[in-house]
Length: 272
Image 1 (tube, rainbow, N blue to C red):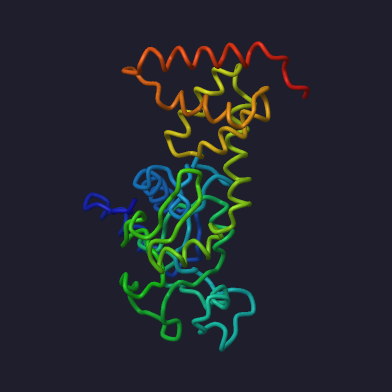
Image 2 (image 1 turned 120 degrees about the vertical axis):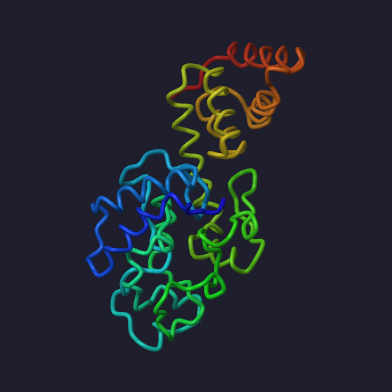
């Protein structure tokens, strides 16, 4: 994914840029319109972790400033100009770019909170007059770079760096903390299973969400285990079989799936 603002968006971008100098507000009409446009251009996915933005509401998505719009609390020299990774959340900010569309993207609340005030400009000692070019950033910039060229999103929603720029994003947004990622994506799968009307409905829903890259097969299988009387091997097998099912699926695949459903449904339900 790469955000590509289009020629037909120029009027809106001009309106947003005209707000420069004002205190930041997400309630400005032009900002609301830009937020909706970015959601569309990003296919309703977080710019950092690529997880789906499930609703256009507070708690689901944030209008993210790639370069921090303001100074972090008690920022002082030399830390505010330091190139050390651990000092980059101490920043003097870039208020001139608060309403710069190239500095705005949609992120999920988790990535926004994890990134915080992280300052990704390579040289922080000189405040830029114009919005910096791609080469002046430490990391993958969603308006300038393709996500897949910098970060590999693995099957079970773990992240592997492909470049140093991708590594900075992974570390700054804490996408290297496998345990917390597992909890985040497992919670989505568990919610699907809890609201499902039986095993077949749960498997259908989870398989559709795995295909949609909402979570991975491992999280889907663990969610099934929490509600239904089956083990990890069975849960993964039933999901793998469902994922191979299609309009052109072999008759044997569908028979195998029905057989697995019968076996599990014949067992006593798990005690809640």
